[in-house]
Image (tube, rainbow, N blue to C red; front, side, top):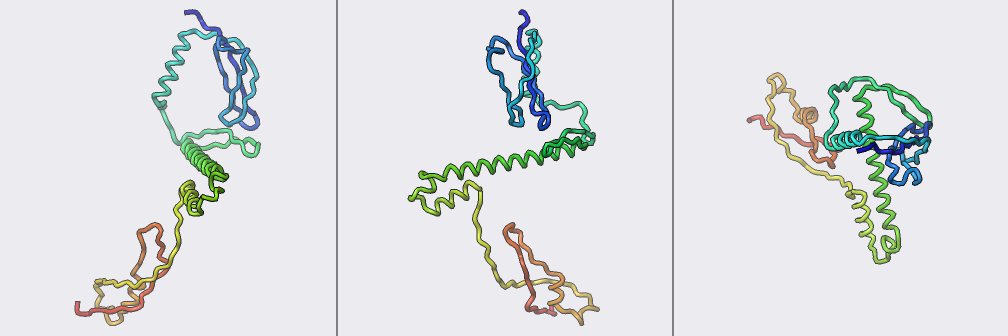
Length: 224
């Protein structure tokens, strides 16, 4: 099989903001270069086409690259060596100003994970806002047949929110405690002070907060 004649297009993004370059090689049989070639950068900007040139690609090379891409899609690429403490320098752009900080690999991974979690939260927030906006019309929440409780229930469902009301509970508890008092402390032993110093009241429920407690009455059975 003869070599394929194709065209290679080079695209770049804003060098002051993103500085990404992508090279696209495509067969002229698909309508290029007479067709319109456009690429969108991962950052969301339309990329700038800066050059075009002919490229000859052997079929064996195409098959090899295709096999590599198939393998990469099904098999995770695991490096032979991995050092999480390796120092790396990367380009960071904030407010249009580029800096080149140096971090350990594990620190950079953690920062990227934090950023991804932040982006996921933003995407969820935007999705919720869109759902709310979709209901703000005459067929939705502005419909006179829509009850207030239905609107509130819809909002809670969209925002994944469970409405709650805080109440204050006052209760009397009976506690029985066995304590071996040293004989030298028996004469001055005060059960109330002892419980104040050693008794603790807490809750295993995540929505319960024990604000205060106090010992009001004690009774000691000295015959036990």
